[in-house]
Image (tube, protein in one colour):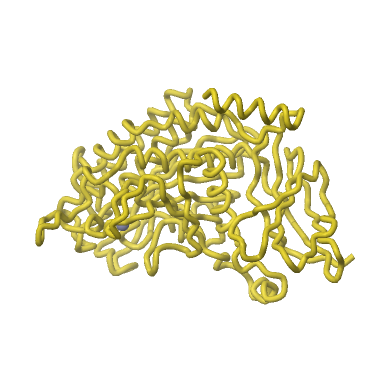
Length: 446
Ligand SMILES: [Zn+2]
């Protein structure tokens, strides 16, 4: 705390004015995330025996029905503690037998959703998700014990805990906390909620999908409670042929909206949680594998997967058993709660920064062909007090350079040649929170 105060005073001394580089509320959010509450919630979820999508829905103690009712009750409780600040509901999707090889009978895939409504731009949404369902070795075995403690009670518990912590604050944009189902059967819950968001006209800025955030002992022999991964696809699958052709001449191969969201989380983590090691992975997901951010990406929404860096495959999708001296199964004792709490805080601070920030600038365009200086222009973002123009070497993964340009809608970066860098623009709010960086979507010549 003392160090933080000194740092703050140093900033004050340097700049004379407080255009906050850091927001003390973000440190409060990090401190408020509770590893013991996350531990208790993972234990409760694992205690439902199985949460397989096709499992029992009637029992009060076993199966996915009991699990989702408990999750909804937790969100309701959080809401009661903040004067009804959450809108809590089930979002249901009927999936028909045969829609996927793992859907062996008609089933209602039921998500649990809690919305913390924004005060200024309530139609802008930022979402954190975890999964309700679990599985064992046989993907259609819906009766065997399947605690799914790490996959994915950890992500679900983190989402509930983030709702507890963030419900103590008010945000400009709406924050959504979602428990998704049907993940292991073919990403059906995410598909359903993504379609719902589209139907409802949500301006969904990003999805932070958490899938396995509790294992620190990798099968690769590495033990690390600091490393974690942020997966993001390079460009949206919904881009047009024209956009794809344009990239050949103007760049943008590694600058899609999901990648900018990944950079945002990477930067927020490095700023506020320097003890952590965020690893941006430049791919949609693990090699050939899936996660619930993908159905959102499929509809053109920005979305990333946040997860541990060192996986243990003997503890994923396995019947609980001992074979050749190896204990298989996704059981409670392998989940590291302090680490899950760290990754929950990573989410919570990114959600808070995004939800406190003004919307990103729109119609960002770039000019400066055969000129010594790059130029940018954009449309004003409501609530912004200024803009930051970023640039980076074409080989760099992060936005390494920036210039504050005040409350304007165009600027010229004198002496910075357009050919040698990539550029982007972010909007800044009065308390210093920034929108994601927008990569130019158009070119001008004048
Ligand atoms: Zn899984």
